[in-house]
Amino acid sequence: MTVTTDTLHDVRFIEPAGTRNYLNVDYGIFSWLLTRDHKRIGILYMISITVMFFIGGFFAMMMRIELLTPEGDLLTSDTYNKFFTLHGIVMIFFFLIPSIPAVLGNFILPIMLGAKDLAFPKINLLSWYLYIIGAVFGLYVIVAGGVDTGWTFYTPFSTQYSNTHVFATTLGAFITGFSSILTGLNFIVTIHRMRAPGLTWFRLPLMVWALYATSIVMLLATPVLAITLVLLMIERVLHVGIFDPALGGDPLLYQHLFWFYSHPAVYIMILPAMGVASEVIAAFTRKKIFGYKFVAFSSLAIAFLGFLVWAHHMFVAGISIYSAMIFSFLSYFVAVPSAIKVFNWTATLYRGSVALLTPMLYILGFIGLFTVGGLTGLFLAALGLNVHVTDTYFIVAHFHYIMVGGAVMAYMAGIHYWWPKITGRMYPEWWARVAAGLIFVGFNLTFFPQFILGYLGMPRRYHAYAPEFQVLNVMSTAGASVLGVGYLLPLIYLLWSLRFGRKAGPNPWGAVGLEWTTSSPPPKDNFRETPTVTWEAYDYVGMMKAMGETQDV
Image (cartoon, rainbow, N blue to C red):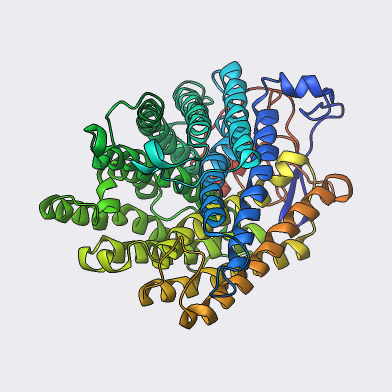
């Protein structure tokens, strides 16, 4: 195999003529709906979650338009309750949780490992169908009149007093949870059993470590949510006293069970984002990730510690002051492994040959926004301040700096980074940079004013508010408009690139890793023959020497 280089960042590994990739094997619709190819399943997930993302974005847009004025003059209070509930449910359960693991993980993990597919291809397809069934329940609820409990389904309102479609909503979330469980199981077995010869644990890309830690959380935490939702449905339908005090139940029990899943679920969303950050930073600085083992083990530490901090969501719910102090300390402690990653990424960037291409721009934004979200999380770990800002817009801002500023920014980075590998086409770099800039500016203009609103005491989940909060709300809605344009642009130019984009070589970024040694798009079984790994992770010189390649720049 020989290497030619068209540009500084375009190393092309020449594939023999006649190589058939996974896209041109069969275009029939049934070949896609019945496929067991992990790459096609990843694309099916990509299409599905993109639809759900824009549905969730519609509800966000309507809320921000409502909040332009202090009076509730666009949406009624009941409609507003339904809109913020549906926004949260769609974005969390049907976009954020499956976004990076189900899309990028499905597509890229086996190729990173030098495998032909995931360990259980049929189960992988089943996981997508379970996701679709759950999403159909979510769509049914939207057209049937909505749900008004908030995405947390707090009892006893959700079990006894809400007249909306709580049962169908929780059933959809319950079914979708099994999609996560099966995906996590598939990833863990694949990582343990299907690595290429020579690909030892400490030669694995950090993206693999991140997906491994995420899969552990999926397997251990998601069944708790499933049990909780079953109990909720039983109480709602059969009126068995589990959570409702009027029936002899305990509403705090629901909160303990729900947050025991839902705080680790934050790391289901953010750990894969951290894996994407490591891959992109290494590729666009031409350096090994500083402190590789610390970054790898910090992913496992985050997964473990994430199970120990759930009750910091309950400081005002009536738990004892002694348990609250313990959870406060643990909430500070869980920030340590995340800080390790941020410091090590920063050390990698230091004096690196940084190429400010689109994936790197998104990751730089991710680091800054995630850091703000993490630091404001420490504010919420302080008992006194938590009491002051709970149920205010401070919580909304903090959550979105983690989830949108963190997880979504990294998802956009990953899509742009692996898009040439997925499709074999390059996107227009100028438009991609414009979109990245709009998203960063629009995001900060949307959510930073909400920190101030929350600290000043504006409650969340209200469709009307005091007039003195209007200026900051107008700024937030203006930012949301910019953010919406930023998200629409990639949809347009990525679809455009499928037909008109410049053809990508196997390695358009000059990166290392097994996924960059096969064609773009990859052949049906990923590699013509099983690769053997003799180089360390992110070792540019070692990889080129091991493969006997020469690079002319």
